[in-house]
Amino acid sequence: MSRPATAASCLVLACALAACAAPLASRGEAIPPLRPALDELLGRPELAGGRVGVLVVDPRDGARLCASDDDRGFATASNMKVLSAVVALTTLGPDWRTTTQLRVRGDVVDGALRGDLVLVGRGDPLFAAGPDAAATWDRFAAGLRALGVARVEGRVVGDGAWLGAETLGRGWSWDSLDEDYAAPFGGLCCARNVVTVRVAPGDGAPVATLAPDVLPPPDVRARMLAPDERGALQVNRRLGSERIVVSGGLAREAAPATFAVAVADPAAFAARVLRRELAARGIAVVDGPGARPDAVERIAAVEVSASLREWLTPTLLRSDNLCAEQIARLAARQALADGGSTAMARHAAAVLERLGVDPSGLAMADGSGLSRRNLAQPRQIVGALLAARAAPWREDFVAALPTAGRSGTLAGRFRDGPAHGRVRAKTGAIDRVVGLAGFVPRPDPSAPPLVFAVLVNDHTCDAAAARGAVDAFVQRLAAHAGW
Image (cartoon, rainbow, N blue to C red; front, side, top):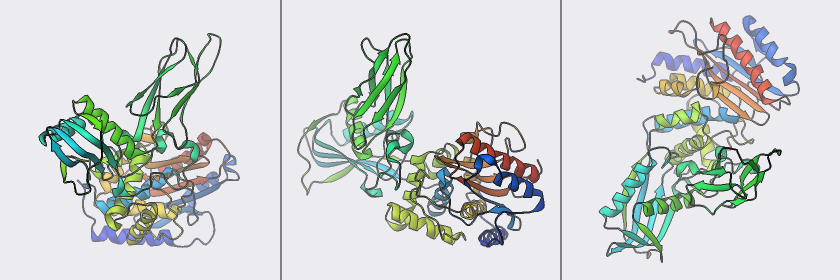
């Protein structure tokens, strides 16, 4: 159970945050036991030419145990999700939920809806996703039948306007917009805003199918490979188009391959899925004129989302970009009646300031960290983590973080050593950016954990080497904590 913050914990938080904001007398400060660890990190030859920002704080008294460039801006990668989660939890609370509604607009005559069938979203990132999707469509079909609708003679419309017109983060790379990790966000999401492309060997050419099959058939340009040939498949969606192109080659004896591809327009995609699912349940749609402006509108069904607490796991544990974008924008929508990027950044800065984290220099281009236009300072990330520890929902937050060597995006790291199974931290990785931020517990469970953030930018070594340098430093932190 989460416990409310006590006056003592709030005082400790205030002291710790004030210490985080204190200027450095010189770059690269550390208490003597951690000085070798910091020197080793900053002197790593594989990080030469890059930038490294570090801050380690002891929450007991706010002491800065180790710091370097903690007041400089760094591209965050997915460490931005720490800020998004803290802002969303502070604004909405862990039990907050939203809804997706199915509305009928028009008259029902002899079992036919003459008008519009409208699917209205309010930001649920996981609507109609996963094994329970069929049950959602069953309830929606039952809701229509309860209103006497056996078929639709009109339009099926997806409405995601509640969260704003934007569907892509500012500064997202154009060449990754068809990747599943860059799926568009918005007021109306469906099936995570991706389609699965299955490519199997065929007689003359590979055979590609979609699930759900609501987009134009893939353009298959791939070929079957001869026994002595080597090749690989590529599956891409053309920029600004719904057309998916399959190219490359596939061996005749190869097993079918699957690819997840982001759609271009999430609201339109959701409307197509709705139409398909209703038809599968006996409610056919015949295109016709839209509803009259004065048509009566009724709610046929409402789907209640999972709670924000449940969204934390994909956001933090698995570093899900869609969930992170949605929660950051939902918080702004709730507070400012605007879920756009400008409002999201303004709201995040205001919340962080209320929590005692100076937002000066923070540039929040998206909620997930996918954008290279994001800038945050290690002291801001540490400040957000300290605020999370003092919050009544701190157990929800910490439980959603990956555990070193055991879960989420840290399952393959820290396979041994003092950090293994102990450190809880959020990872971050985009091209030339590596980050890690979280908590290093102490053997005494009554003692607060060390709170840390490490951000590496502009490294020219491969990402694995940069991660290894960061991990080695965190292992030293765990040893210092007493493990």
